[in-house]
Amino acid sequence: MSDQTMPTPEQAMRAQVEFYNKVWTDEAFRARLQSDPKAVLKEMGDEIPDDVQVKVVHDTDTVKYLHIPSPPPEGEISDADLENAQGGTVSWLVVSFVSLLTKTME
Image (cartoon, rainbow, N blue to C red):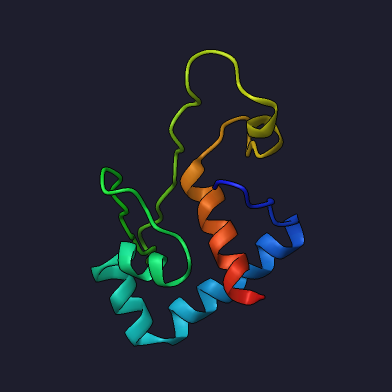
């Protein structure tokens, strides 16, 4: 995220709920997200760098996935990163994803 302001927790939660509802109810959207997540994210307003992979996984009744974010970079964390921290670490993809979801709801 560059010059964008962070969404409020309420906006982030609403964006997440709406995104999941679309994934669960729109088969074409879900298929496109699975096959080319970067293109879908770009259409939603966020471009993922070429050197970053995006993997889409689906929970089932018998398989659950737990996302473990990458550790923060070595050294001092900026005040901006501290404000955006989630559980003590910053995942730019999660922050960016929530931001782009919020943008699509406006």
